[in-house]
Length: 129
Ligand code: MN
Image (cartoon, rainbow, N blue to C red):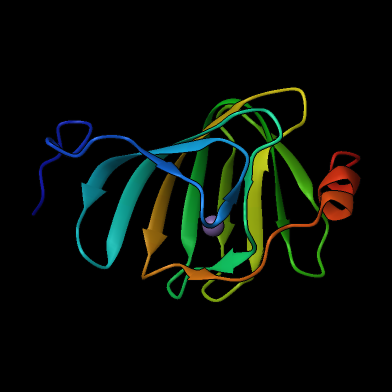
């Protein structure tokens, strides 16, 4: 059992740059080994690279407006309260819309497998979802 007080103590928020486009901050809520829970804040236009989670990932949007898209699939606009489940191994990305920040809680199963950057044309096209 793991009792969490909202975020892991002694773990400062991290700005991630290597696998994200734009300004993104992660705040660790819980690290239970194979499962990690993070609060993620994307500034307008910011998004992840393409990636997959070996055991899947649950996202719960807590504020703003954003986009989720899987490889070869339709992009979706998401807002506060929306839930997204990325299947194990499903290649996808998530991020803020161009005109809004996005905050979500991410429950990630297994180490993230990073792929390439989401291209500007792909990101722009996803705004029309
Ligand atoms: Mn993901």
